[in-house]
Length: 154
Image (cartoon, rainbow, N blue to C red; front, side, top):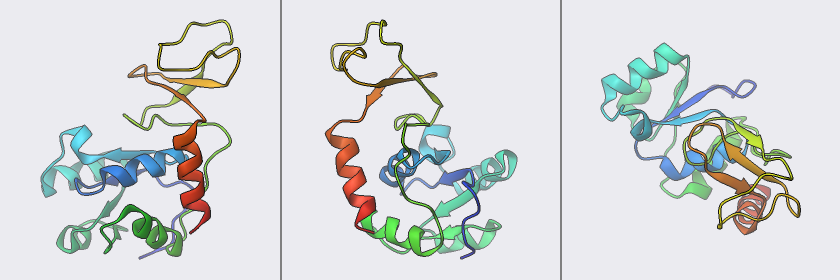
């Protein structure tokens, strides 16, 4: 497995949805095959090629077909993160979220005067970000802390 270059755009296969969320929180452009209607091998290979994405997969046969693919062997997300760290991926949370954990689109900071959904904190009291595509709101809450602890333990 070659080392990761500066934030390669990634495509994660259908077995790696949870890992995609972690990578997005670390600032990676991490597309997930199921979100992109690319469930079969040919569709994943075409998408990776067309968009210049590095394929991350647990499928050995698929990895052999994609240039610079990252082959993971572990099933649990923490072990997968360790594999990626060993391969040279930078796995630290960014100071501010850059990508939506749900759909991978860029996020933007919500102005302190803007209203937020009931599930999100008041942006006058806490920094809040909104996905430019799906509208999901994010903030540095307990989930952020849990992921920070996970990647710090790698």
